Length: 274
Ligand code: ARG
Image (cartoon, rainbow, N blue to C red; front, side, top):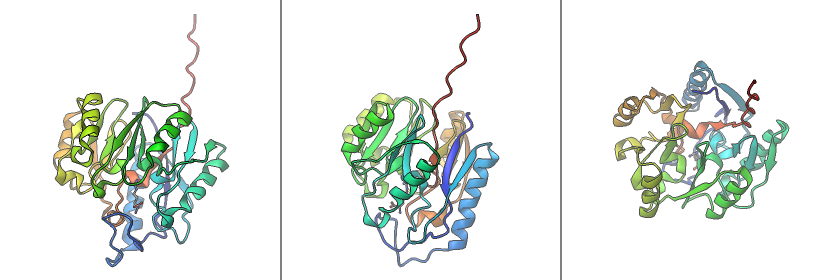
């Protein structure tokens, strides 16, 4: 396990006031206090594991801003801004970009619609890139060129799994877990070819956002209600940790959605001594 750095955004203005995915029902009440408590538990779990969490100030009028994963994509110290599909979230892109600029990171404004790490997942070796509902397929090549990684495009076909990170999680450099039925037949074949040993999730675990998990390479934070998935992770040598984000699920988000990994340039190795 490597110490990681994450960006998170407190759900101080969280609510479900519009519907841009099948989980969001504005008529259903949300509990702001509970959302804050659940989010705080996620933050303190990450800190307790030894990771660093940076905070982005939440802005009023942007109830989905807690989903920091969508705010940008950072690989080797380079940051590609997000460009949101729906007008309700559009202002989040520049707000996150501004945060990264102020930190002094190398940034690039995206030309095509991409929803950050919601659809662009870095494995360290390549980018797994989702399309079908939010991120424009053309953004995949744009991200690959700027971030300097080969890209594997994956097509999502079930509207409940509208972002790649709701259907697939990167566990470490080589291993992933995913829910096959969320992908087109062609993308399922691509995944099977590249990841023959992946952990496959069943509908019951995928439907409670079991794949919207945060992995540091050893610990995997996911909903406490997953059954088979937690067992499969343990069998594969990971340590599953349950974290309940039921309030945020009302907006269609889970643990991964709430964290944006700040991937700095890997330190250049010390020259070998004679
Ligand atoms: N309500 C948000 C949306 O539909 C949820 C985003 C969840 N984030 C994620 N990385 N999947 O855009």
